[in-house]
Amino acid sequence: MTYPELPVPRLGPYPDRPRAYPPGHPPHLPIRPLWVCRACGLPWPCAEARLLLRVEYDDNPVDLAVYLSGLYHEATHDLLRLNPHDGPTPRELFERFVAWGPYRRAVVEPPNADR
Image 1 (cartoon, rainbow, N blue to C red):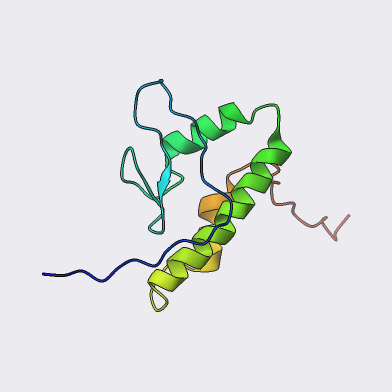
Image 2: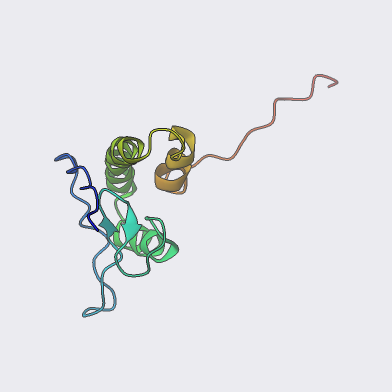
């Protein structure tokens, strides 16, 4: 039985973070173009990857936001090419890749008009 070949990922940001922790264990990096975690098989970024990314970029939240935004762009391209009809929506991918990261603002309720 032969399987169709997966599309070759573009040369966008290279997902090389988070670093393996503890050292010597499989890193929680994505397998492209499927965007699943190499270590645990969950959709990437898995909970462990998110935690490790937050720790690794603790002093550089802007760098983390830029990194996640670039990977969101690449994942959107890859996943919509793989499954254009019932793949994840751009909004779902945004929440998966970017919304959990730094600079997430709480929803602000409009001021009460009765005051």
